Length: 242
Image 1: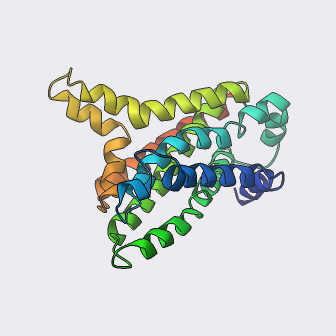
Image 2 (image 1 turned 90 degrees about the vertical axis):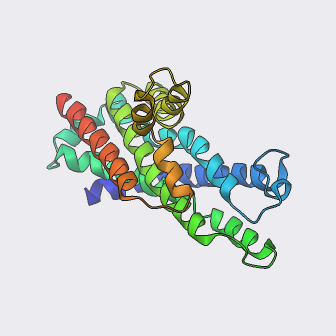
């Protein structure tokens, strides 16, 4: 697993793709938070808070994480190197886990530049430091587990697809459904009491708890279950290709 993890990280950072993604992610968030006139602009909001950042980022991750994960298995199958990997003394579970961890690590690194935003908001607060650090750090933890969930879905999409384009489109679609689609469907209140159950199937309600500074074990367990399920399914589909 460690060998696969190192190989994947080198493939991201060795050809500058990870650096470009991190830079693009940081630039987009900076433009929305400080320059563009929109509901996320911190100066327009007039509050010492990164709440708008934590609302914006999941939508960006919905497109970025599938872009990182689309090549994990789809490219290996497209180029024929998947059969070579099968011939190596590797367990399929190690292969899946190593690739998952590499996507997750790169996704988490996308958040590192936002510490500059945190410092900026901290300094600009009146008085200085007038920011809810509990809610902020809870939101960061929420983003970290959300990235892991998106990465698991992306790996699953790649294991199901024959090429990278299909893996990307399927990954974006699945992430969108799990984060926003289910929540939106439940908001129509078409199923009566079952709407509450439907809401709790999707990511949004569980991520919302983190953004309030509440780290509930139920939410943590939910994301662990989702990540475990996607990796088990990926393991199953890759094993079938042996």
